[in-house]
Length: 241
Image (cartoon, rainbow, N blue to C red):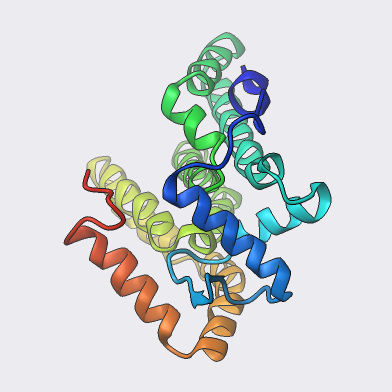
């Protein structure tokens, strides 16, 4: 299921859609300029997304050449990790048979297949959000601070992939869940764990500070205000849904 969904004929279709083209061209430009801090598209700053997906694509292109397979490989690997997390999580809570069923259902769902084969940031984002959500739930069920650190690690990587959504979803959902269980004090202790917050900041701050130092407030204003808050007010890039 994993091979068929994410790797079979990965290179067989040319890049399509605005997003695949924009991510891939920005990565090509990054390699051509030798600049791994700021992303540009057709000579203009590209403030749509943070840096992690471009680094992953650049690493893949450096290893396998500038082609569809290399540009999409990070998404395929992230989607594979996403499905393996589902398998491991369900096996821990239920049994191997149920875990296989859950992972196969996930890997053969059309939307997941499309995300896992596209040269965009979404598969990596999903991997990190799912990792954070599973870690939060396992902390609730089993206790242990290691799950708290894992959740902060995943949220940090997600924030470096696509910004605040990687933090807002796990925190909002877990707050509601813990609140309904009457465990809001436990949520506060986990959410404000000093070492967890420090781990998150160690992952996120170096690049965000570097891009601000290089580009001024342009990225922070463009990304957080236009490409986050702005998307809740009006359609962007034809994404009217």
